[in-house]
Each structure stands twice: as structure tokens, then as C-alpha cells.
Image (tube, rainbow, N blue to C red; front, side, top):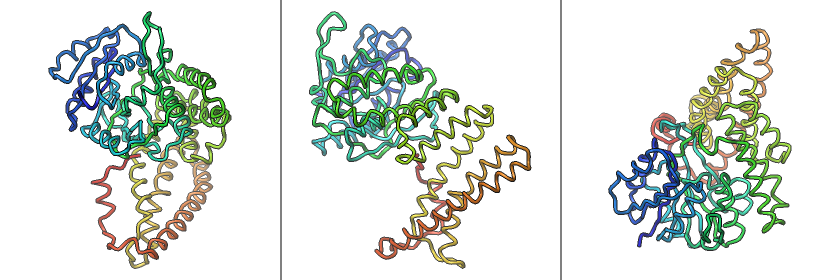
Length: 435
């Protein structure tokens, strides 16, 4: 019997399904079966799947039962001890199965393994954005508030974990064992993860490597934000039956994170009105987002406001500039923590250069690109004069902080190798600068 069962629900995705199947068949790990669940598809998806001639593929057809129903069918048919899930419009990188099998083999207490996801557009082009959740020491509250698994193409789960949460239902005229709740058409993932987290001893843990490409499309299930929030609230009501004490402690915080997540989705869908409303609701639910994750929360709020207030062309230009500077800023920010070679003006010159690139240059470019289009030149200059001291204050704080870190590293002797003059260039050209 195969060690891994790959479960791929298919419903009207003829444009992407062949690429998804190929990403499974080209895995470096080969001891698997691929269960393709044709969930009432009405397009050419079935014919495309039947073109693949591989003994590891099994095609199961059924009437449409939704994503949860298709996954349940796959779990019941699975022979492997490890179950991996792939949405039929996403893509796996070649080492995905090998990495996660090794992870579960070496971690007997881990029931759910996940990894980093890269966002791609409908044409398969990278958006240079990555889903990097918390990887270690995952608590029940982490699963509820932040859902580190992230999306349905990421997890590899022990079959024993599903067997521990299985229940009987008769939704389709016959009694069956279910694992995902088929009454949910959205939020079925997190509803299942919460039962694993709260009702079983199995732990969650991630691999800090990008192994999945997650397709972002306006027409997918996750695009309907209002319905997604309603389904999330249904999940919360269901949890009241088996985890009321836990829910009393964490509901408000989790609701805030969920609303912020939906606001960010609204920003990607270019709906500033909805994004602004959702962000305000998130902060009303739990203001601790502002100090627990200040950068992500403020950026989300600022983006929602800008999208609601600015013409679409101006917002698109700002977003393009921000995305182009973000990887560079992250490299320079990381380099602030490294020792610098003394130059004519001492090591402070190199650190100030890094701080300029990381903290001052990108925001000034954005301000100069946008302000003259919003205000007359006099008001623009006045606003720049008011904002520049704030940027300098932030840069000074960074200088003091990195200086302290530098002295600490020098004292304990962690850095012995001389600093390379071309270090920044090599980082820019040869390193993956993921978010």
C-alpha cells in the first residue's frame, strides 16, 4: 500500500487541473497514490484527468457535494497513513511530499504538517508574496486566531488524526463517516483543524520552506467575503457545544484576526469600501491587534483607506512601488543585524546607508510619487516637512537598536568572518527575498 494518499477534489477547473496533476506526478517522493475526486464537474476536467496514464492515479466520480464532501470521499478511499490535500487550481513544488513525509516520520507527536505558500496570479505568475505563518510551538489559540495551515493545498495530516475526529452523518441518504463537516461550504478547513486541535492530542507544526504555489483568483470560493464571514461565525457557534471555556477566552481576538484577514482579501479584490468596514470591525472586536501585530494591522488599515479614497490608478502605482521596494527593504533590514567593516567614517557610515535604504528611501519615494497629485505643491512641501522628522526619528531608533545588537554580537564573538563588500549585491541577485 502507498505511504501517502494525495486527495485532489476537482470541480470545473479545466484551465488548471492538468498543471496540478503534473505537480503531483513529478514529486521527488514517489510512494503515493493520487485520488482525483470529480465532484460533479460539468466542464472538461474529467476528460483532462483521464488523459494521464499513471498507475498511481485513481479517479472517483460523484454528484456535487462541495469541497468538504469531496475530501471526505477521498479520506474514506485513502490507503496511505499520511493524507496530503491539493486544490486543483494550485501547484506543488517537487520536494513537497518528501519534506513533509520526513517531517512526520521524525516527529511522532505532530499530526498536521504545513509549509510556506507562494501567491501566484491566474496566469501562474508569482506575485512575490508569501504566506509565512508561525511554525513552532503552535497552541490551540494559534490555530483558532491565526490558522497557521493557511490554505487547503498545504497540509499533510496523519490518517490517525482524522480517525480521532470522525463522526457519522446521513446527508446523502446513506450513513457515512465524515471528517470535514459537509454543511460548511466555506471555513470547512479551519472548522476541521479546530476539532483536531481541541479534541485530540495531535500537534501542529510547519516547515520553513516554500513548497506550494497558491493561486489567487477573484472568482474562487474565498472571493465571497460576506459568505465566508457568515460561515466562520457558524463555526464559532458549533464550537460553543464542545469548547465553551476556550471560546470565551479567545473569540473576540479570533474574530478580529478573521475580519482583518477578510479586509486584506478585499484590498486584493480592490474593494476599498468593504476593506475599510472590515478593518474597523476588526479593531472594534479587539484593539490588541494594534500592539500584537502593529505593522500588519496598520498597513492593512492604511491600504484600505487609500483604496477607498484614491483613484484606482494612483493606488495601483503606490502598490507597485511598495511591492518593488519591499524585498529590497527586507534584505537591508536583515543586514542591519550584521557587523560592518569600518570605513573612512567608521562602521556607522555603513549602518546609516542601510537605514537610509530600509527606513527613509522607500517611504519618501512613495510620498513624492503621490502627494503632488493630491495636493498643491505648497501643501505637499509642508506635509513632507512634517513627516520627514518622524522618519528620521524611526531611523535613529533603528540606528540605536542595531548598534546595540552589533555591540552584543562583537562581545560574544559570534561573527568571525570579514564582511564582504559585495554582500548586498550578492543578496540582491542570488537570494530569495520572501515576505
